Length: 132
Image 1 (cartoon, rainbow, N blue to C red):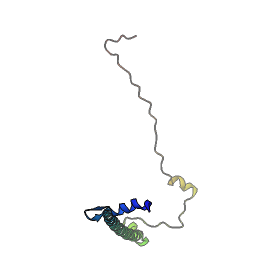
Image 2 (cartoon, rainbow, N blue to C red):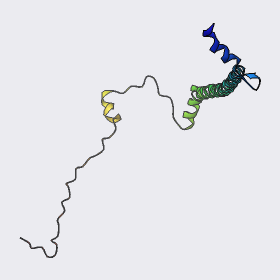
Image 3 (cartoon, rainbow, N blue to C red):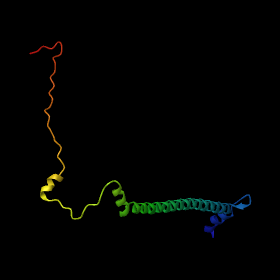
Image 4 (cartoon, rainbow, N blue to C red):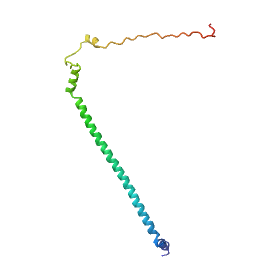
């Protein structure tokens, strides 16, 4: 029983009529409540951020759908054909072929390249220099 006497005295020690172990217990419970509150506030912030990101993702998906629809509308063959006829372009005949003699006529003219001789600078003698 002598081994339990220091522990017993520890639990019986009082400060103004309240055991100090009870004070430590209340402080621990208070700290746990504080930590739970902080964790809950952090989780609420993260939840709000997740909701914001999900709304952004939905908006971006809507934009992608609209852009795809716009691209499909712009790429319609009938629309492109009407635009090309409007500026004077006509569809080519599928039977149109060029023979060997016509290939030279179809080839673009090669630009004429002339090589100019490099310009040599002649230096005038500077005053005071002796010419040899």
